[in-house]
Image (cartoon, rainbow, N blue to C red; front, side, top):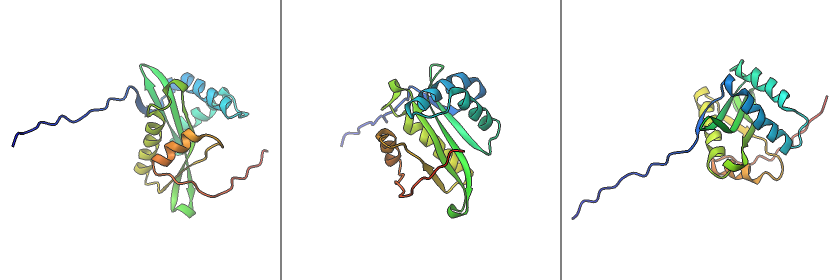
Length: 160
């Protein structure tokens, strides 16, 4: 019987996922500005800068991960930590996930979510949730493919 040599296939991503650093701030805010415009939010890039600065300087509040290619950010995800007895302690809410249009459908969003999930596992978190704006089927597909299930809850809010 002939011996067949198998060479494992290697997939090299054209982007790197890592924790955001202070030197990413300008590019991160530019991406956030696109996201905020897409969802018709009241917040601005300056508001995002304040949030990102706060999170980067307070590791117990959350984490921001970025996708980078050749020195340019092409996406980011922000997870916030919250304590809830309902879910046995610390939880993570995926607050934002944004991928530049030219990088969509290339695995960037899934890789960013995977990085947040790994962070959650390392912290001993038992539950991760994500709020999805109506009609954002791309994020719904990404979350579904990673094992998330839609919850039947109603989100209520009040502007102060």
